[in-house]
Length: 292
Image 1 (cartoon, rainbow, N blue to C red):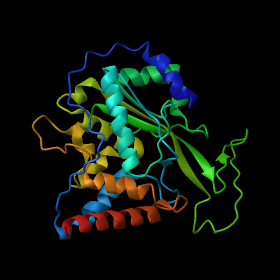
Image 2: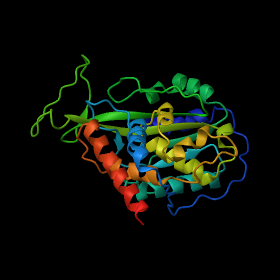
Image 3: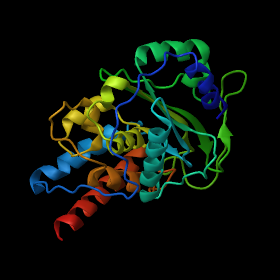
């Protein structure tokens, strides 16, 4: 997307990032960490986990990418490429389409000294990065930690056509087939994801942890504060952990199960139906592992 390509111009004007500390190389083979959970608590944990990672309202399907093309900026060239390779591997493990090498990036992970300064700079230089294709402002959730992330979306009707408002601000949708009570008339598609990470948030983390965290932020529409309602093991807690905390070393079984199911549910089903399918898929995955 043009706006994401233009971001490179902004970054050249941003403060130079400090030299990043050497980190272990990222693994391209996907290994997930399984943990046994008590049966009586598992259903509630799954419910809250899915609610935290899929935040669309009942009247909309979940937001998904058609395909991804990741890019990382702000670390050494070698480490940037390691993280890109790992994000690609995570997506492929979840059966998410990945664009060929040399593609125009639509998932940007940017490491910077101060996220608020970068947000201010981006709003000033590239306000288009903060508008969806229907010209509405993007949803930018306030986060207390070292990360801020958001998606730019467009809406596709059942025939795959992009929905855009007229000059009067009215969007017309024609449909055939199933009633809107059964299937949504449109689905939101992520055209881009931006993940800003402050340098201080990376201290003590491996390249794999950084990449897996970024992948989960890009491929879900998480509300980070909702994670506190579930004890589900997830790499998404890594940025809020402290040095010495017991945090996942990589993508967890819960994380991968969510991605695989979220990107396989019927695209025009309403989010309530999609979430129900995802919950059942995660439970099945965990039960299969527990039985081994």
